[in-house]
Image 1 (spheres, one colour):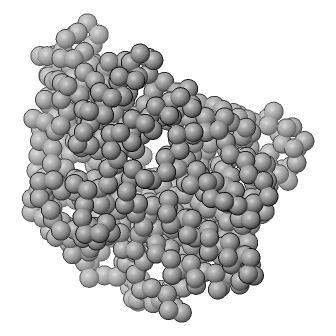
Image 2 (image 1 turned 180 degrees about the vertical axis):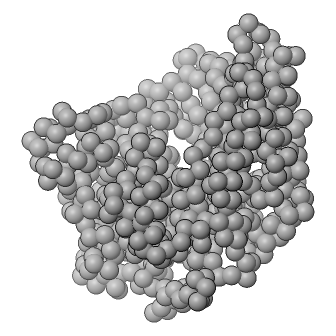
Length: 608
């Protein structure tokens, strides 16, 4: 195979995607349990994923366990692999994926579903879980998408719900026991279902009403009726790989990434991550400083990015930045702070992040009008946005990006036009307060298409049609008539399909398989996404995507993901939805507890 691989790598773009051999990669030979850790997207995307880096280290620190990385090939490489009978392989050793005990996928985006099937097929592994009879090639999937894994239930043996640092070692230990003692697959899966946080779809029967809604979710063979996600309670003790792999080519996030905390104190009603990662658990400044120094020294990077759902909500952020800058400034290492909120952006914070290198700033008001920001519980006022931009312009910034969503529940044309009005007010702030007008200004407005997601207050809401979304994009575009403000909008077709897959049930499995058979690959990339192909798959399978995307659900309806508990109870979601319809805010977790229930996962307390 090495000779074949050497020959075909000369014919493809970016061959470094497929060679391995990077600094700090881990190679462990002749282990008792071998895990192929698969990311269903390209190398440069997967290597930017902090969760994958963490779990790679966790598994390789286990005795007698080898974890190797596998990424999806680009279309040119897939073509060469199929024509030359080169199976999908792991980067560390070139070992074919089919020879691994466990094939683990991480799923952060619904548009990767077809690529899961493609990678299994490239590996020569049967697609359907029912066709994999032995204990070898157990397919497990984790990540935010598996909080509703039902569309992939035909293909995945086990879903890992929540954070895997402690859960995955328990699963692997069970697998080792099953392998050594010669268990059947049925016995192993039943035992895996008893480990907290693991959902085995074959142990649940799903029945449907005549109208297509779910009638019942019935556990089989004594499986638990509800599966509760796993969390790491003490972030300071959680493994963080300071000896991270240094990629052999440029990747999307090519820098050291420090995770400040998990969870979010905010309650934005559209945000799935804000709910499924609750409760908030933070790292200490001392831990973060040590991890930063060790990571920079082992990797040679010259940029540190502070990562969380809302970095400026980290209480000791100023102290952390001071400590980092003390180390970074003399070494010309820059500090970046994504995920900033306009309501707590300050001169002090601005001065810290511009000490080494000044980059553009990004804020996400999400909605143009105050009424709609209140309805979605964004808890950001117009004056917060304008003040943040004024501070930035006075400090020498001349680039600001503003992110919004179109199609939010209760949105009107007035709310759409209000986005343009807010952008013009930001431009006016630059004209009044910029410290260097000679450089000009660049204000970029970007809009995405709202996708209602499971385990949020909006899980029952309908998505507006693509035609209506495009009309609102045109309305907004026509409302912004100055070259100083640029406007970008997300393609409505991918968001429509994302909505159908995100809230789908097991009946979508045949649609995903048909789409893959028709040629669906790497659907998150505009170069390869084919919407018409997917619509043909839905049609040939007799499934209506509108049933999943644009249909409003009743609050008493059984949802396909109701067997999964993320810590937030359904009554809280209903309350928040009711408040949304009244344009009423809920306080953030620091201002007042709304008793969502997530503290039950952390011994009855939240970090904040």
